[in-house]
Amino acid sequence: MKYLYCLIICGIFFSTAVNAQEEKSVGVELQGDTVPQNTHEEKYRKKHRHNKHSENHRKDSVGSPVRAFLDHQADVIVGSMFGPSKQLSNADSLINKFDAMPSFGIYKDNYFVVGTDMFEKPTSDNSDAKFQVSIRQKLTNSTLPFKTYFFLTYTQKAFWDVFKESFPFRDLNYNPTIGLGRALVRHNRFLGTITLQFEHESNGKGGDDSRSWNKISFGTNLTLNDRWTLHSKAWIPIVDGTNNKNIVKYAGWGQIGMDYSGPRRKYTFSCLVTKRGGFNLNANVTANFAVRLFSDDNQYLFVEYYNGYGESMLEYKQYRQRLRLGIVIKPDFFSMH
Image (cartoon, rainbow, N blue to C red; front, side, top):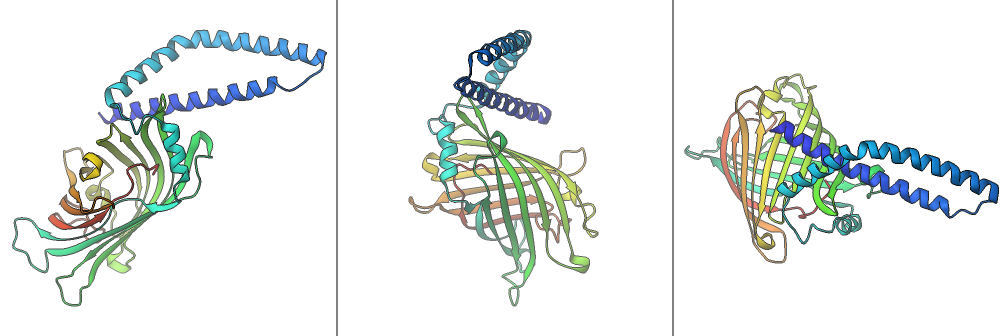
């Protein structure tokens, strides 16, 4: 299944990139035809263009059946996966809208939640508060080749023992990244985005409590329709922390998730599954449900459920099944990151 999914994304990317390149080539050729030239040069250039056009036509006639087959298959796949959507049917206007948005904004959910382990009596040892701050900075608009974006992100997650004396922070996890993002478009329908990022994650501690690793990650975010979004990420781990050599076994090597948004985003539901190391069906699961508090802002009442390992870097080997409740500020529906 994952190979089919990757093949679909690569096919859509290749098709949109080739179409964009052809449009650029046609524009350059038309621009060249308007340059005034003398009679002899003009005849020579016309003859040269005619020969080149004939040669390209012969090449296209050979490759056109394959091209037509690939285009047809791409249309079939897109048609079966992506439903109709009024707000996603004009990709050019969406990209222009994103270019005009402020460069600084929210990246992931920003939340504050408090909770305890399920099926256990709440104590100060199994109850805590968790909050996350996540921001992004757009460095360029769609001016790079293939209309890609260059961006920075920073996410910080804190685990706070608010039920213990002096309210100590048990662990802080830092996750800065640098990456490239690109819109996926087919027949002016915005399909989603793909990203390539270099990520660092550590807890900033020293000695035996030090944890850190790096990742080269490839991610996709597909807007299937106005309600459903499918997102996934796979990474190449580069583990440099001496105290967490086996972190991939617990924190995983890839993840896939689904988001559902109600009418006017009055409520949202999401589920994220992170595959842990090994060939068995083991995974870390995060599920949350959010209800909008006020109709004119993006603040939600938030319930989060976590089941698995690797929730915090310090205790990545510890199994946790915890339910938390709090407030979340969600990012915009449309983003290139």
